[in-house]
Amino acid sequence: MQPKEVAASYDQIASRWAHDTFNRTNGIAQHQRALQFVARHGRALDVGCGSSGRFIDLLTTHGFQVEGLDLSAEMIRLARLRRPNVCFHHADICTWEPDQPYDFITAWDSIWHVPLKDQEHVLKKLCGALNNGGVFIGTTGGLDEPGEKNDSAMGPPMYYSVLGIPRTLEILAAAGCSCRHLEYDQFPEKHLYFIAQKI
Image (tube, rainbow, N blue to C red; front, side, top):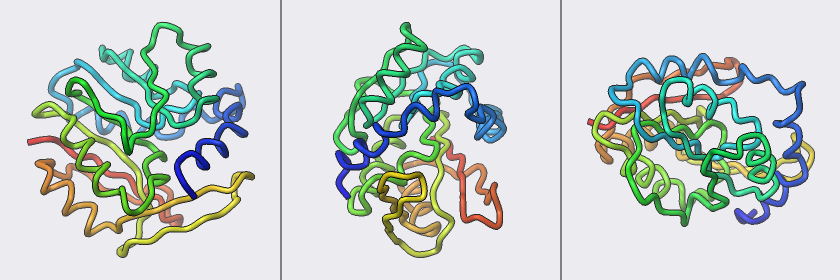
């Protein structure tokens, strides 16, 4: 699947994340852990922000000026309705370029939809978009080798890819980021999150 096809799939189900029944605690404890490493509360970016706004709200309460970015037009439309004062980018992280550095970047359950051939580029871009001391939290599949798959577990067809844990850590280090935390947080599911800091 191409990114525009992933976006179309998310357009069909975007309202799930904006609904009152959505579990707004998902990922919050992990972000609170990441926030412990933050030195400066300046600009923050939520990559694949979706429509729930839960990470935007959390970062705002910690004094960040937060921006959201999402590939899905419907996700962005719903997000803007809920938070009209937040800057949202309707864009593909593979081609979008930041205009200023950030002190915190989150890519929770989002960049694993990036095509495998673009994964390294996106990881390097996000690390490069951090100020010194900036923190990056992201999720990936907890596999050792690169891989990709398509499924319809959420309804519409969806694409996922991973570089594998060793290569992900290599790229973070080569991009000037030190891994501060790595955890299978939904074990036995292979859902892995990392916290990295620009040094």
